[in-house]
Length: 265
Image 1 (cartoon, rainbow, N blue to C red):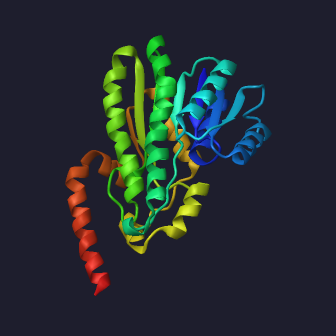
Image 2: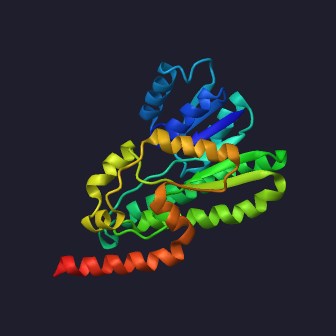
Image 3: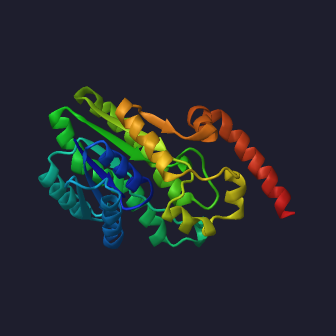
C-alpha cells in the first residue's frame, strides 16, 4: 500500500506518516520546507518507522500545481500508484480582517483550499480509473464556526466541506471514498506560532479546552480512513458543532456578542 501525506513534515501529517509506516505501508511525505522534510526523514528513520526503504520525501508547495504534480509523479514512480491520500498541508495566520494584507489572506486560501484541490487533481483521476482509493482531507474545527480574527482561515477550511461533499458524490460509484476531518487545536509547530497572534476575543470564544497531542489526532484519522468514516470530529464541542451546528451556533454567537459588549464597556 502506498500512502501519500501532504504537509507531512511536522505535526499531524508527520504522525500520520509514522503510523502508516508502522503498519508496513510505503509512505511518501510532501511538504514545502526542505529543511523540515529532512528533519522528518531523520526522525522517522531514527525511530525505526522509516527503515527498510519504505519512506520517500519530496519537496513541493501544494499551492503550485505543477510542482505538486511532479512530486506526486516521483513518489508514484518509486512506490506505485497512491492508495491513500492524506491532504494535510495547511497554514494559518490570524489577524483582524482589515489589518491583514491581501497577500497573506490569499496565501491561506491558496494553500488550504487550492492546495487541497491540487492534491486531489494529482491523485484522484488515477484512483477513479483503478476504481480504488481513499482520501482524507484535513479541514479544521474552524470550518464549523466563524472565529474572531480567522476570516481567511475559516473561509478556506469551510470551503473544503463543500468540495469534499460534492466530490464524494462523483467518486462513490467508482469505489473511491473521500472523507473529511475537523481537528481541534493540536500541539504542532504551527499551533505554537499561531497562539501568540490569537486575539483575546478568539480565546474567549474557543474556550479553555487543552490542545490535543498530534499522535492522538493522527490515530483517530488513520482509524477513520481504515473504517471508511466519511466525517470525523474530535471532542464533545466540535462533535456537537459538527452535528447540530445550525442549532448551536446562534446561541454561541448570542453569548459571544453579549460578553463582548460587556468587555467593551
